[in-house]
Image (cartoon, rainbow, N blue to C red; front, side, top):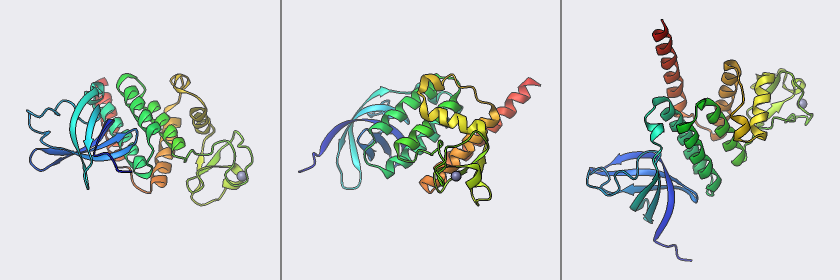
Length: 261
Ligand SMILES: [Zn+2]
């Protein structure tokens, strides 16, 4: 079957890179997969695509298939996520979500569920307080829809049901090792009972329940660090936005302390 040269699709701008004098190359997440496309002349103030295709914009675009890159011939913004761009912390979290979405989309063709998950997560990051919870929920959902859902209910080695005690997480085997199997196993990291509970809860509950979760800073930090390691292990790469996120949060905390003095 001959592929249509022109196609219309909804798309979310995940990355942008200036190209030449007035063009920009965009990485677009679409329900049908990830696409790299060039927007000719978009940096000219007179361009009709300006105002429709910023970072994290959701837009309806017309794409013309090219040999290496598609060309964006038309664009109409559907959602701008203004609240994300006007707040540095929200924006930084969105960049992290975008980086993960980009990495996972490169590994799989069908991305309808991924597309919906990313759009919903960006909405939550724009509108809701407690950004960290929504980022953790995103990571957990992302892992399960990509087939990497961490096993949190039974031991990945002996299959025994996980007991409420300190157990161990194996990045390699993608889940918990019971206390007996995990002891002394190199590379397995201890996971507290509370962290295990929260992760299981996120796997088995929807956003309305997750919204009401109370998590201490210590437990949250533990889950965050574990999920980052597991995501990096799964993707076989370092996530660039993580270091920036940590630095920004540190600076915000210091600024808060300084203003409280
Ligand atoms: Zn075991």
